[in-house]
Amino acid sequence: MGDAGMRGFLRKDGRKGIRNVVAVAYLVECAHHVSRLIVQRSGADDVHLIGFPGCYPNKYSLEMMQRLCTHPNVGAVLLVSLGCEGFNREQLRRHIAASGRPVDLLVIQQSGGTTRTLNAGLDIVRRMRAELAKQQAVPMALDELVIGTVCGGSDGTSGITANPAVGRCFDWLIEKNAACIFEETGELIGCERIMASRAVTPELGREIEACVDKAANYYRIMGYGSFAPGNAEGGLTTLEEKSMGAYSKSGSSPISGLIKPGDIPPRGGLYLLDVVPDGEPRFGFPNISDNAEIVELIACGSHLVLFTTGRGSVVGSAISPVIKVCANPDTYERMADDMDVNAGRILNGAELDEVGREIFELVQRVAAGEASKSEALGHQEFILTYKQFEPIGPACLPAA
Amino acid sequence: MSPNESARLPPLLLLHPEDNIVVARRDIAAGERVELDGESFLIPATVELGHKLARRALAADTRVLKYGAPIGSMKTAVARGEHVHLHNLRSDYIPSTTRDGTGGH
Image (cartoon, rainbow over all chains, first blue to last red; front, side):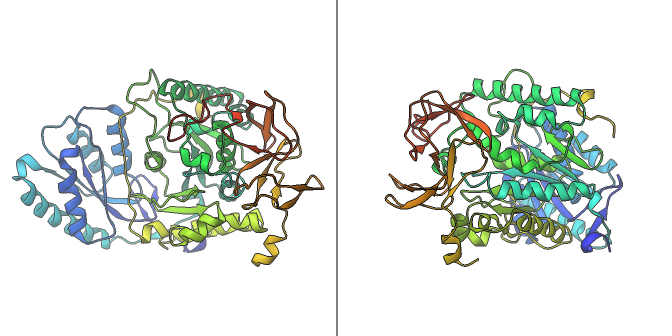
């Protein structure tokens, strides 16, 4: 066995998945219902629904779908198209086929409507699951893991308990050469100089400062910072106060790189994910809800996601398990069934290291196959919207 | 740790020695006596878990420090122990939003 009993499904690109799901992907909202029926009627927990709702072509969404459909946790993919939408379904299919995964495409207008597509889809999913069931998992080590972190429903406890505890866990994962990703540059406004000072090169530090400036400008034009009413009800007053709390999720390791959605960390270390679109604001808010951030972390290869929450979020995700770290002891009491870790006990005297260690050990158990709370409850939220990005500059990923 | 033991922990948290605010470790009722910088202090109004109180009197435009880092500036002066929140603290970056669209602006 690998580290702590971890095992993974080896893919052609050398990465390993900690799950082996069949993804059913709608390529426009018009194919969403048929895809959802296929997933529901398959009756299997390991058949996940993903997709893109728009009818207009968009380079970002095509690249995101390519990354998601070839994520190591995905074993096979069924694409469902209406037929007339702008999504480049053939390119996506070729990309998935080249990754060595079973892939099939149903076009509702050609299959003869809802019922015929549903029946054909159920047959395909059944065959794909039978094929995946034959795959043998192989040992997997911590240095093969990619872990993302996100916060949602933050309050005045988040930056004191759950976020620094995840930071400790990140430090230990990075010591073992895992790749760890933290994000939402718009929620790091105010932390730009501290972050830049942790960059492995001064050039990367300047890129980090520039990307936070970009985020501040973007949110200013939108008219709102990434700050929800619940944040204020929980005691947070300003965006930069929320940022300082969110920032502590990153731990204390040097920052090895700045990546954008769909970029996969080239090696172990700590990476900042720039989620704010490039160019003039065009399609609205950068990430309209927490799951949009989770999907981008997963598109960067995250095998699982550590989600810290103070007010109490219940979401999970398609493709990768989400581990809930609850910052607020009162919220934990109310919503214990949804929470994997009670970091709020730090306020009652528990040590940060003790909670960090609990998260570190849970990461390994979930990677070894144990279901997280949201996963066991069937949470498989997913959202992908329009964006535009330029590729990262050469200073963003300094050589090791 | 039992609830009795945790009740003995100081209800106000100082997160960084340079901070000019403290954070409520639990809900604290008005009239409760708590320790603030080694002195007994009478809480003037009920404060909820995670909320901030002024560690000392703060003049308008004072930079507020939490975790040792600036988190905004005072809109108005406050007395020691007063609740520091949307009504008297503003962002130095982007105004905060509330459901009725007024807070922080």
